[in-house]
Image (cartoon, one colour):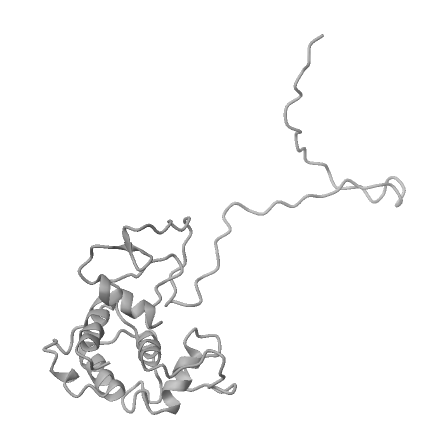
Length: 219
């Protein structure tokens, strides 16, 4: 005898029940609601963290410090290792260092506090309060910014249209970066790095500069 494959079951649309006919106790067909095909993922609430929709690549010996976008023979590999080992820069959730990304004002606070070993993840430095009007409790650097403000590392903008705000996602230029290095790490010559003051700092440049001062025994 022959076995006939009936194929996958077919979904057919059923008309709604007619309230004027039949008993109210008659069983009604179950309704299955399928989600639309154009559902979009929610927006990333934290611009400092890059979401990934692709599988995370495995780390190999050819990578530097476990970052898939940095080769082990990269001339800045030692600087990157130093930054990761101190917890100053741990990269993004997809194992990327993003070396050409611009350094942000919230990121530099984490870098400095971790280098100073002046931050305890178990501590609550904010006590439920906002350090600046534009820093919410949900911000990834909330506790870092509270700590930095408490020890006088940052004050936020003192004048202009941004007075009283911190603007955490704003990129840091070389003048601001040199100033915070001088103020926080007591590197008196940090202002003499021969950097173009208006140029924004890339993450790899920050690692390179900090590692230079570490090698000289300044950090």
